[in-house]
Length: 165
Image 1 (tube, rainbow, N blue to C red):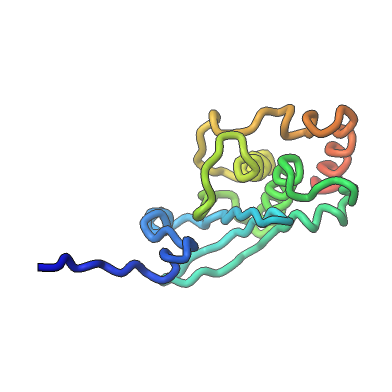
Image 2: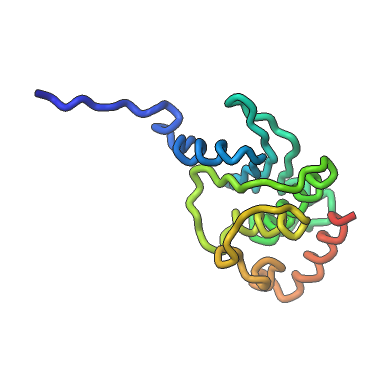
């Protein structure tokens, strides 16, 4: 007798959706901060799910940092840009009266101290309550960009101040 093969769902075969993780996140009934990194940007969205449908409440993209004084000569997908994108999303969430969420990293590999967790740190510093472990966050030196340039901290502080208004 031949063994029957169980076909996976299409989005799982395409490595787009981890249905087991998605189900666990949906069972919490909290809105999700969806963090995605592309080859050019870092994207963050606050999403609520109702009856298996996702509704985007607010979003932030690292491309928006340029409007707030981010130099165009620097990358908008590095760790400081990820932190500021999370900070921007956190400020937008506070304006919409949302202060609790859970992080959804999707199919992205979890790397301690990576861009996704810099985004998480930015949202936490904006005042959002998110369950996390302190050991996964990047160091303060990497968040302010000391690994990029010694003078980068002043640029970082200027943009963060512009976002905080």
